[in-house]
Length: 267
Image (cartoon, rainbow, N blue to C red; front, side, top):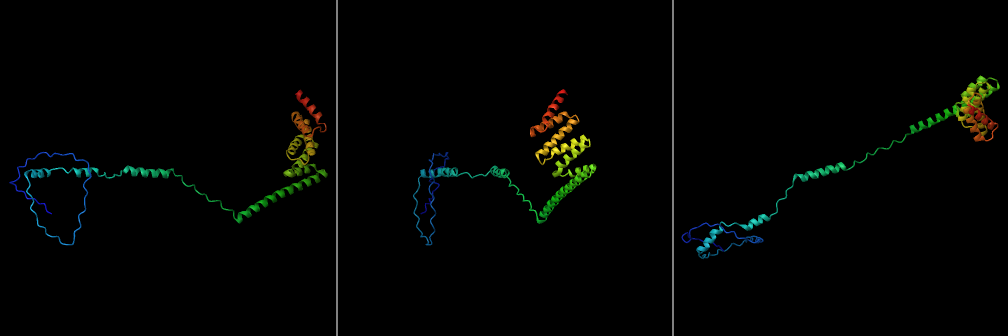
C-alpha cells in the first residue's frame, strides 16, 4: 500500500529551525530485520491508490524536525561491534624466539662411534706367529743358558776357573739359573780372594728365588761372613739378624751377632 503524501507549500507554516531534542533512548535490541518476501511469479494486481488524509500543521512540523534527527540505534549497534583483532609483530617474534631457545636447549644426539673393526685372519696369524717367536726366543735363551751352565761345570772339573767364570756369567742371564750360577760365582771369587766381586754375586743370588730354604740360609751365612771379612760390620750384622729370624739357631749365627754388636758398639 503506498503512503505517498502530497503537501502544499501554502498549508505549511514557515520553518523555524530549533535544536533537536535528544531524548535518552533505553538500551534495547534493534528491531529484528525480516527477510524480504520472495517475488512471486504471478503478476501483481494493480490496487487503486487511496487518498491520504490531509496532515495538520503540527504533523508537518514534526516531520520536518525528524529529518535532522540522529539515528541513536545505529550508533549503539556500531559501538557494540567487537574491535578487530590486531596481531602484533611482537607475538610472532616471541614465538620465533621460543622456538630458537628450544632448539638451543635441546641436547644434540651423541655421535655414535663405529665399533672397532674385528681383526682379520691375517692379524690373527701375525699374533700367533709373534707369540711363537717370543716363546722360541725364550726357549732358545734358556737352552743357551743351560748349555753354558753345563760347560761351566765341565771347565771347573778341568781346572779352568777363568773359563768357568765366563760360562757362569753367561748362564746367569737366564732367570731360571740365576740363583745357582750367581751363588757359585760368589764362592769361586771368595776362593780366589776377590771378596768385592764375591759380595756382588752373593747379593745378586739373594735377589733370586732360592730352590730350597737351606740353600738360602747357606747363601745368607756366606754373605754375612764375606761382609765381616771386609769390615762391613753393620751390613754383616743386619744379614746375620735376618738369617737368625728366618732360620733360628743356625750354626754359629748367635755368636756372630754378639760379636758384631760389640764391635759396632765400640765404633
